[in-house]
Amino acid sequence: MNFDEWNPVYEAILADFGFERSADERVRDRLAELVSPFDTDRLPEFDGSTVAVAGAGPSLSAETSVAREADVVVAASTAADVLRAHNVAVDLMVTDLDKNVGTAVDLSERGVPVAVHAHGDNGPAVRSFVPSFDPDFLLPTTQAKPAGPVRNFGGFTDGDRGAFLADHFGAAELRFPGWDFDDDAVDPVKSKKLDWAERLLRWLERRREERFDVLDGRRDGIDSIPE
Image 1 (tube, helix red, strand yellow):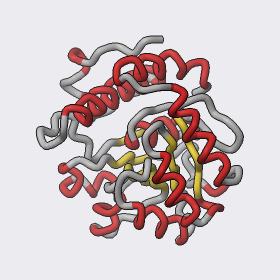
Image 2 (cartoon, rainbow, N blue to C red; image 1 turned 120 degrees about the vertical axis):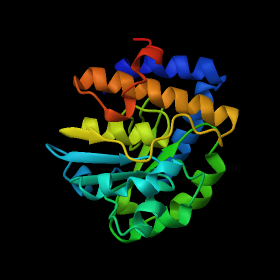
Image 3 (tube, rainbow, N blue to C red; image 1 turned 135 degrees about the vertical axis):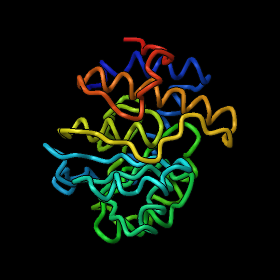
């Protein structure tokens, strides 16, 4: 995924949520000041692998076997805690620092890469928490144009960013335990974010010419992505 391909989607997201590009860029630049370029050799071996991208939905506890059987496990936010509680090793965590920062820092200190995301309203968290990470295992990301050491592999929510990252590095197959697009417990903003996550996964499966089981029975109702 290069930024020229991603940018029309990003603009649609900005418009739908009323977000400001300049705010994303400010926090991206703040993150860039705090980190060093990430050595991608420290990532797990995505190329040719079956990758489980674990969402943080309530179904994850019942679906940990999907992650356990995969070659590589990517955990979105608090999915890392659920997986570790079930003795499933996490190979990469994706977070925007809105929850379980302690888990993210601990993983980095154990040599597990953590993709830390900068967006318009998490500047204070970036400033406060990023210095606590092992710098060698912090992969800085943005949804805006990449700058300096901060990368953009595509994606919007923690979960779909994990999927786009795995795709970028050559995953052969993607699986999705713990994804609950119709979770009634979330607030309206989170619900809209889940809608976008679903749309982005549909876009990604078309790009990959793959069919994700998590979208079975849902494809006809998913809005297309602007390209």
